[in-house]
Length: 200
Image: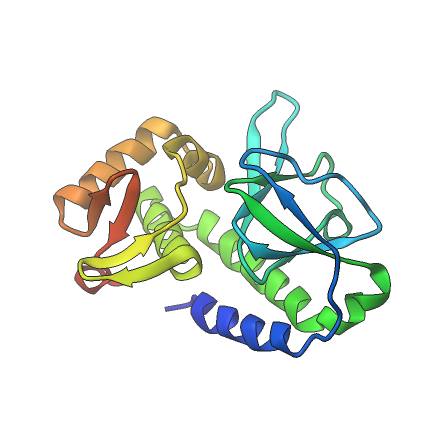
């Protein structure tokens, strides 16, 4: 298994506890766009966001999913256009430039997670690509329940399609296939992965 998000999150937690400054905090609502400032980074304290761009024809291209402990911000990307969209209610701390050097660990984790997602996007066939994306989400945003691993972030079929460079119809069909095979359960609008039934 190539993913290490769980121990990455643990290292973030220990790193955060060692940071002494109390940075200003802001709260954003679901679907709100975090302001495009080049003079700050944002540390997510609660909630989830996605970073994205779009092509000339308006097609969205998801660049990453980020949650508690992650460091995000416009200075971390050279992609234009670039946007940070809140997928839930989000609370962030504002990290000014003179403190960026204290967050080297978080910056390294940002790079590692972006590369993990990039490697998933290029997997073939598309069924493997989707399954490994779900595993990645479950490690980053999931929690253990009796039936398996519950992904607590509600990602729509269209958003999955945008990440994986496929169609919403294909995502819906494959999710149904995973469910028929017993590798996936639905819980309201959330997904539970039964990882013991499927190798990664």
